[in-house]
Length: 286
Ligand code: GLN
Image (tube, rainbow, N blue to C red; front, top):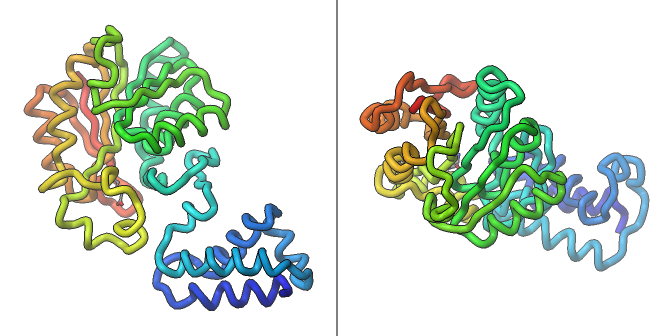
């Protein structure tokens, strides 16, 4: 079949959904499958593709039509200017999380300049936060922790992809993963984008998220705050005095997480808003 005709079929399969960008996605998925640039698709519309390619493509487009995230099909997602390898089993990095990373990069520049510092990232997923910090702050040594095998695998693939040696990943349940490494009071920064969706809210999320993204990366317990309650007290053992604890939070969790940080004695607790003016991150100083 001709590329143009196949694209049309692909767009038809997904054009009635209320999310995504059907034409762009149809082109991206085809160029990815053919292993060509997307401009190739524009300029070679009259080329014929094999039956095998046609079948594979329509299968992928049907999968996409069911809500399967396009990033899991393309196996790639851009975050902080870096193209992360992504697969099912890790949360797709969100643009909102860049707010957190950009804040930390600026904070490091101002607070530490080029001095050597240690950062701990709890719940790495694809490694988006750990690796973009390690990439942009070469003076930082980053320790990333996750409980899942797939995140560990994916994050290590990305570590290699970006050729970074100032980051190491550990498997385990939060701080337990680095127990015994004598890292108490060694971290200048602890960062986490933990699961924070209240359990009964998960089923109200978009199909793309609730049906295909890992529950483990979303489920923050009954009120969504379980991980903030677990991490905050323990983080004091691992932070230097004056160290920064910074979290991504849900759009309406600012006040509740502020209370947790304040209760644990964190100073200068502040909320960062996203472009829509909603709560997106929070930090405090030990
Ligand atoms: N921001 C994600 C979402 O809205 C949630 C990520 C998380 O729980 N850390 O789907």
